[in-house]
Length: 103
Image (cartoon, rainbow, N blue to C red):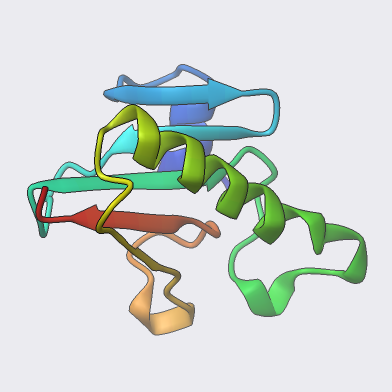
């Protein structure tokens, strides 16, 4: 099920990387909806939250922790929104979280 995010994670295609750690990468959205719009992506490829196992529950917590770090890094910590889309609402079939801000 190799998605475009998997190719970015493998450095097979370029992306504007904002932050990276062992299990998560954060990139700028190529079609931003707000002044600040980044995607927080786990490196483990799971299509949607409905495909997660109980062993994968830590992933959502890790995405939230990374969101907090990135919000501070981007100076938007006082006002931002987090969004996780599911199934038909996802453009890419790989769990990810949007961090959006007008700051």
